[in-house]
Length: 176
Ligand code: AMP
Image (cartoon, rainbow, N blue to C red; front, top):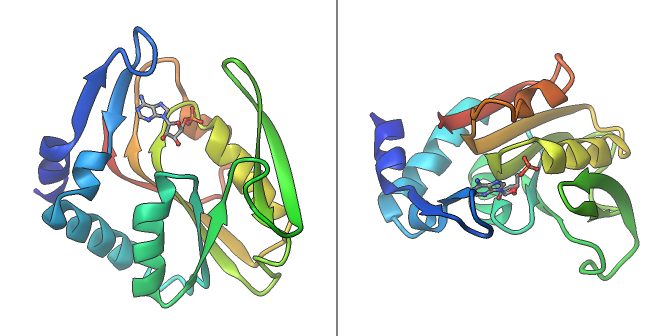
């Protein structure tokens, strides 16, 4: 029922940012008070007993629900950002995208070995950006790492889920 409400509110924008891509525009989920509440509450129910101490949000669509969820879980919120955006010392992870290389960074004092981390992003496509975020978080050697997406694209050939180690718990609220 809740997932149907989310699906109903999600806007599909054909041919953005390039021809052939069906862009899932989560801004229509974020602007709906009802959807925002559903997403944060559902994720809170999933993660409330996991002892999460840090939520990592991936720039920028992962910041919205990530920060709200961190607040509700009583956890801290960490920004995983594009290169050159964070002002202090960072750890980095580079990864290959369709057109060239990209890098993400987290402040080097953001996570400790005592942390239990949940990494959150809006959408799983190929999994490349989340895998980089996961590998980046592993550089901090936290106690445990969980992964969540609001949307999982299950289009044939993407195989995003297959990128991650079997022992990592991954949840998604809606599959398309
Ligand atoms: P990937 O690394 O291929 O899993 O891509 C995931 C990232 O790219 C997420 O941060 C998404 O916001 C964005 N993204 C990729 N494909 C789409 C899509 N079809 N609709 C909306 N966002 C997308």
